[in-house]
Image (cartoon, rainbow over all chains, first blue to last red; front, side, top):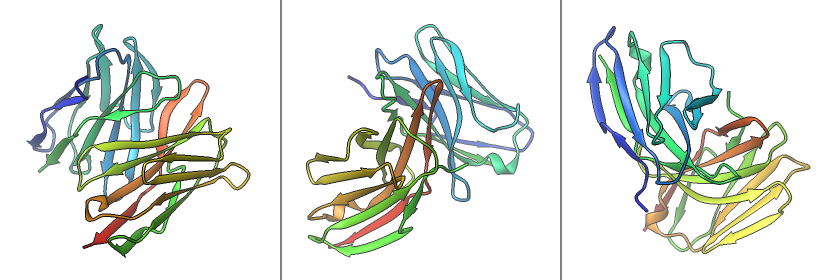
Length: 112
Length: 112
């Protein structure tokens, strides 16, 4: 099976802009989670979707949003970008009862 | 917030030696998972241990779990230069909480 794919791999934006990141899960996986990784805060949970419904949300401002489509592909959007949003954004998909997650390569977002 | 805390934060060993990393967590869990990350790339799932298990093996990896102490350890035997990476523990609480909560990781350097 193909792994989790994320596009784009790298993005450079300026403050105030918005960005959309995309994630395609492993075929058959219906749960998609998003994480933000920074040197200071480590890996932090953003949100999780299952069958187009957000089941969990982390402690991030409303500028961070996401959605999932009927084919389980997911997007996350960050509006009004701030310098602190520079991070590696990781998507993971899960298909098992124990929430074993499989990660994509990440999107490196740099906000200037 | 971080659930797990890995110890040590950094570990440097010679090829062929064993590497042991520890993880402590705060709340009850359904399972605990270990991941590896190479140089800012995506995370690779290594092993999952359920709360009713005490020890698990996978190749050169051995994981233990002590739920009474809320701690886990990851042992990599006969380490190789290719094992150089950051290692993270992540906890899954189960129920309606579908997120993984990660520790800050241990940076392992295996010197040839």
